[in-house]
Image 1 (cartoon, rainbow, N blue to C red):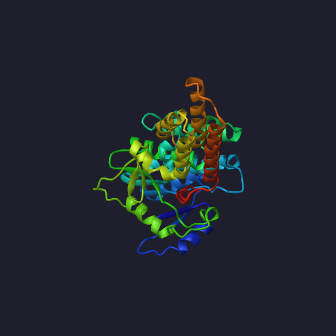
Image 2: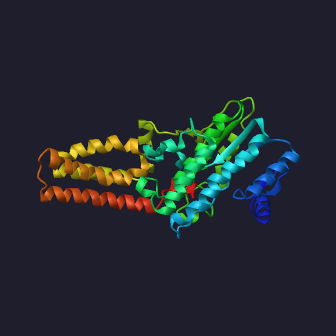
Length: 353
């Protein structure tokens, strides 16, 4: 067994914290952002052992709260996406027929967290691994140029990155020989140095030991036992790549729009008592499961305004002071709720940091 680390010294420190039982663990240097380092690892493994049975790919860059996302996106994607893909490409020829390969990602790697018009960039039924890398490069360029939000990319770089990782795992599994299992896994919120700066209360976080249990179980799936393949898995359960309607609403607590804002909009529309209100709400609930969480904040503003304008133009309604006030209250409440959600990730989001 090998423990790979960019720094041999830090790798040795980590090894000293692990209680080993009848297992020999060796430290080996690996920097997934350096192709030569990846090649050296693959060459060593082939020369020493000839094959690889199990891989847990967990290389990840951190995100700082003190720097703009656009300044961090390139190095983040270079490590989490390009590095993970390049490592898999180097180790793939060495994987035995029943190998188990896990890419540590996040529940934010579900494709439905992107708006529908971006889904073709991660179409795992027809694209290749290199195509996914090109999609990630397009996202990086858009972030650095300041055009990402305008074409509805999420402004939090974790989401596209994790989707890219899960897409890589899905395509790798699609093309792998029968018997080999390749998956992405979400460990959940863990109490680590990467998570603590983002949260004041870590009481609900898992220890690294507890979070590792379901991951190790996946890695040790017996050769004669079928298991999930090409999936995103959290706590032993498969998460959907694309939400169905019922599955989408079961994830409402993780969406940008908070339920309180939604309820407030409905009550404000009722109090205002104008005919365009029901139309706006019907349109809203039709669009939400189709656009995905990334465009929620835009929908929050567009639907009430659009509904009111349609009422004036098509139904000859009068925009009275009371109706204008109700619309202003709706927009203000949504803005407050969504802006707070964007600045302060939920506990679920810690796994992506």
